[in-house]
Image 1 (cartoon, helix red, strand yellow):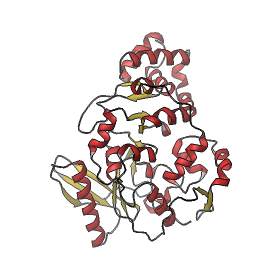
Image 2 (cartoon, one colour):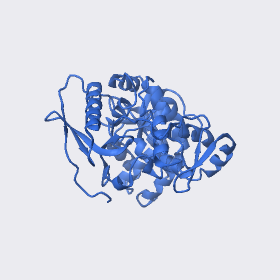
Image 3 (cartoon, helix red, strand yellow):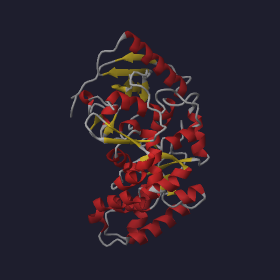
Image 4 (cartoon, one colour):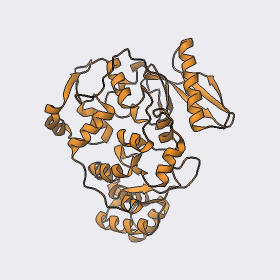
Length: 363
């Protein structure tokens, strides 16, 4: 399968070839979560994918505790359905345990099991900020590194950010409690890796073992793929890497039209494969990042083609293409930008303008 064929298959799974009328929580489940390092990205992610989406749809589900913000995949914050928060988090617990190794110098003498018990008592008594958690745990272990103590609590426990944090149009500091306490039910056993492989392929396939390991931040998934091999179909990409897929999953033709899409920073489309060339042309590798900061990205013909930003102070949507655009492409981008603005910023006037991109191509 060449890059364009992989691109169209992945875009279809990602709901980016055609908008779908799925409810916000159902789409969040299908996509196995939405990157949520910042508050707004999940809203932009769904606005690019769902027909008739309104920010209140996701915000309301969060207020009703049907979806939550929690650290899961790749040690980053995701918006997950309640069910996934209680199952996917246990699935990636081994990665959270490995993460603790990065802070072992600051945790000398700390009983991590006791820390987990104390931290649970603290955050279930009332939601706590990371600062409050650090200060409370420091009383028990005054010689430990305060930051390491708080991170250890986050790694040992499934801590969710309570509302109003994450609600559209509202502000609130990050305050944490356990997923079980917030959702009113116990965590589920970690799902079998086989079941998660099938869900991953439905949302991101066709994909290699390394692709899924990159998505999850896990290792040693080869055995699960091998167990599933009789139920899957396989292909090879242009570099000879074996790709697995669901037999009946959609794989549109390479020439299937792909409309422009405005994606948020950290969108999982760009983060969930070891080889990102199915979405990111080689000449644009690294253009969506600057240090540890990700930019909002523009897809044209299914591939990364530029960046965008909202200048809210001056009322501008600024589009910064990486290369020359045809008149038809510019017209389609403007129409898509207007739809995005109408979906998420109704009642606020923005003009849409094209700018330029500066910076190295391949940092």
